[in-house]
Image 1 (cartoon, rainbow, N blue to C red):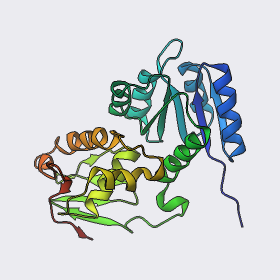
Image 2: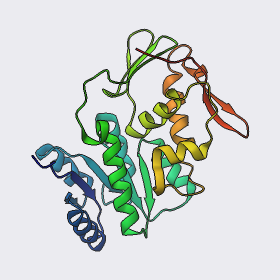
Image 3: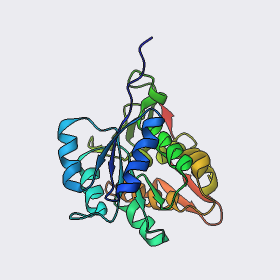
Image 4: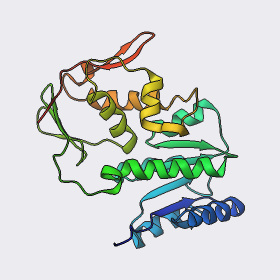
Length: 241
C-alpha cells in the first residue's frame, strides 16, 4: 500500500526559537516544515515546492504577515493559519477578515496547534484525503449550482464564486441542512470540532465573508438569514443533482 505523502508546511516566523520549536514539532507529527524568516523567503519557497498549508506570524521584518496572507489568499486556496502574539479580538477578526482560516495566539499549546493544523489539512482535502469523483455531492438552490467535492460554486449567471476552505465548510453545513436554524455553537462544532474555544467568533467573521461574496450576485444576499437569539438559517430550498 502506497503511503500518503507528507504534508508540506510553510512556517513564516522570524523568532528563531519558535521557528525551531514548531518545525521540530511538525516533523515529529509526520509533516515537512519549511522555515521562512520573511515574506520574501516564503515567496522563494513556493516557487520551489508545492505548499499544502502556511503558518504565518503577523510581525515580520519587511512585509508583515497580514499583507502576506492577503496576497496568498488572493492567489491561492491552501489553508492559512496565523500565529501571533496579538491576542485581542480585533486582531483575530482582522486576520480572519483578510482570509486566514484560523488564528492561534501565542503562547500556544503545542498539541492544540498540531490539532488545528491537522484539522485544516483535512478540510482542504476532499473526503479526508480519499479521491472521489466530481459530482458526488452536487447541490442546486435558487439558480446556483454547487459541486461541493470539486469545490466549484456556480452563480445563476454561470460565473464561478471562489471560497476559502473555512468558508466552504461553513456554507456546506448550512446547505446540507436547509431551512433549519443552526446555532453558532453547532456551526462551530461542525467546522472546528474540539479545537474551538467557547467564545470563538470565527463563525461570525467567516459567515460575514460568505454573505458578502454571495451578495455580489442578485439574490445572493437573501440566502442566509440571522435568527435573533437562535443562529442562522439557509432559507432557499436545496436539492441534490
